[in-house]
Image (cartoon, rainbow over all chains, first blue to last red; front, side, top):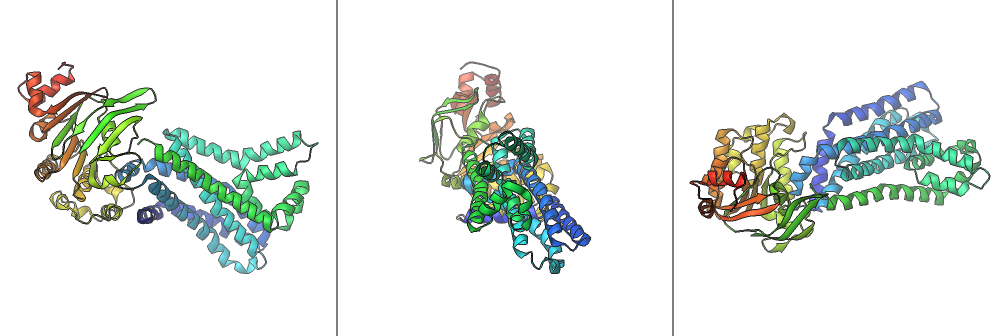
Length: 263
Length: 236
């Protein structure tokens, strides 16, 4: 346990000093400050922020995570030649990257929102879910990127796979669902579309926010099912549980293959 | 100290180690030699647990290795090339390792002084030259005063002065009763340092024994020529 604490401490130290993290924070700050200065309508701001977050966070987490593990391969060898458990190192690096990234998202988006807090009087729960979703996205996609980097020795292949996965979850996936729904439109599709949503972490965190809005009615037939199912307490619990599974499963697979790997 | 039983490692279709039976004696300086790709680094990495053998057993100080990690407290390792987290300073890297091996507080910081590394303490790793990084590597291997030292090409990348400081240090540690295992391509180094020789060829042990024994077997004048002959394919 002690070793884990020290690894996390030094990783955070290392990550916090790197330039890209500052750029990442400033990016969020600029976007949310810009949006907030344009309009007073909190719902518009939140929806725009949501759309940007759901594209940027998975992309940044996947790419940074993959590069991070590849860049540190010699450091990994140095630490693994010390009396330390492989799982401790993997977990330490994972938390040492995810925490600063989640923090820089929270600070970058949160500070401008605090400046304009008077616009968000009634939007407390939505805002909370927006931040919660962003933090989940960070942890989920960093864990996936670590799994990819552990399984692929070839940097180009790993990075390519990360970018493909990002495109798959943020664009291709929705297209595939639409095609599926179109083909099977004569059948009841409430349950399958619920399952489809749970299978995509990006959709899942987007729903966390959208369902707190009254616009879910605009999502039509399936939207009603979602509100009915996911809008209530049970639905919220199911989405959180799925998000937790999404962040722990890739981590567990990653830990397993990291323990067996040759360096 | 270190013993292997039918140690076998396969990468895909490539057999890196073919059923090695090696015993590395305590308090001796053992030199592992062999042409490029003969399995030297793979062998060293299996001892450190960095590479998992496909089959066979490995014992370090009587402890059988299968997923254990505590035994590495007894080992100091100097890799061929090492890099550290770029944004940490030299001092922070040393502190990190000290915290990881917090059970051991008898630090051997002699090399820091001899290699004049104090003045680099506050520098970030990314601003260090390749040679200075290699010095840091050497310092780390000796830092915890471990009973076993594993040095992979210790003088590669070091200037002549630092290289001879390191060589003297190795000799002092040998006198102090350490078990030392090292590889090097500089044949003149062996003459001074080596006591036991393990010659690897394509993943198998080609020769294992004392230095004088090897010279006698090949019928050469000195170790350098004996090794050169083995590399050229002389049968013994």
